[in-house]
Image (cartoon, rainbow over all chains, first blue to last red):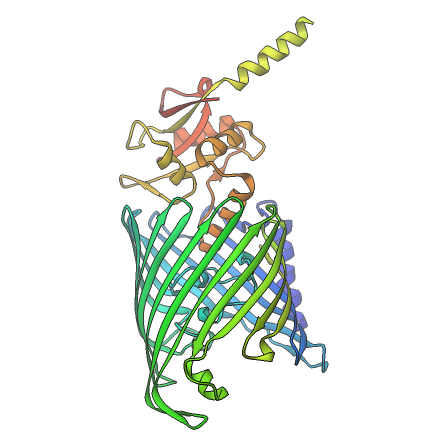
Amino acid sequence: MVAKFRLFFTVVCCSISLSAYDFGYGYELNDNLTAGGYLASKYKHTPNKEEIELDDVALLLYGDLSDKLSFLIELESAGTYIHRLDNGQVDESLDFKLERGYLQYLHNDLVEVRVGKFMTPVGLWNLIPIVVFREIAQKPRISTELFPKFTTGLELKLKTDTIDWDIIAQNNDDIDKDYNNFHVKEHYGVKATYRYSNTITGGNIGWFYDESLALKSTYLGWHYKIDKEMFKVLSEAYYTNLKYEINKVINGYSSKDFDKKGLFIQSTYKHSHAIHFNHRYEIFQDEMQNADLGYSLGKYEHINVLGVHYRPLSNISLKMEYQVSSFKKDDEIAVVSFSVLF
Amino acid sequence: MFKFLFVVLLAFSSLHAEFVVVANKEFPSDKIESKELKKLFLRKQKFVSSLKIVPFNLPKSSELRSYFENKILKMSESSLKAYWMQRHYDGVRPPKQVSSVSAMKNYVLKVAGAIGYLPRNEVSSEMKILTVLDR
């Protein structure tokens, strides 16, 4: 493990020392090949545990194969080093998985096709998958529980004068399926995005089948972002219907059919380029969780996160934040996060 | 005193020098709008007709580059940095950076689809001038 770390950091340090390297923009191995990566670490304190974590270690390689054909590979090791400060337990695992890996054919500026594993084009948050780009390190619940984060299949991107379309299709197992939030066997979806001035808005509809859970799910989503000189607002709302093939019995409640829905509004005040103050409010309804906790199925959870984000350099992010939930004491979380893009 | 006036006049004339956006002679159009130029230099647009476009930038220290980025891209240095970091993660590189005005001339002359910017007095007759920008 230590040897693997040493090797990784040697590679990173060597690349930094090379003259073609521009910190934060990757290292150009040649005219058509670029390497990069990122690290994310955090200190996390909850009522039940306190830990430091080297959360993500990732390597990125991309380039052009011809004028129209390009590729991208992203390998990531998540939960690489976790040290529980409350009980001294240490977990180490440098196990790289394929986060993204695709071939991209650019027919022209209006039509693009991707084949391989890619981030599911849902909303906006799901397409900012690394902490260094995010304003808040903690993920909204609706971004992790309602649709598959990754798709292994085909993506067609179409641009018109007013609307960008993303159409996805998957009819096979995921690559590195344990690295996705669902074990997707089939997945189909459409996203429409409308941009004007500093605003982006749009919606999603999709359907997927998780074989391991015997689950068929339909999801609907809406997203909105406005980015001005002094402030930024990001908001997303989703509804998912989960249909199991057999009855799920949760805390005495039995059904094949559950809903999850929620909305978050994340507001950023830009004090300066380097310092941003953030707040996110999320309202979430999870019928399965409510059944498990003995609540009425329609009860809403309210989650608030307050944080400050400092960027000493554009590719380095330091965040301090505090999250509280109306439901679970465990979700009262204080986080200090450090991340860097190479 | 005369020396001082000469320096002031020289600085004044350089501030008001014309610069031009130039392209390789195979570039499919004879002119370009600022909006399209911005898309090409942000790599949001990669083709003109069916020709793959290769934008070139002068070094970061170049005044002409700063002026071009302010006038055409209309983005602050910090916004531009943040933008290219996000694009790096998406697998898109920024325009190639050349070392000097003469290197820019060479690339624009030799690379099909090349587009860049130069002081007007550096333009070769074998290039296309797509637009003129006053400083």
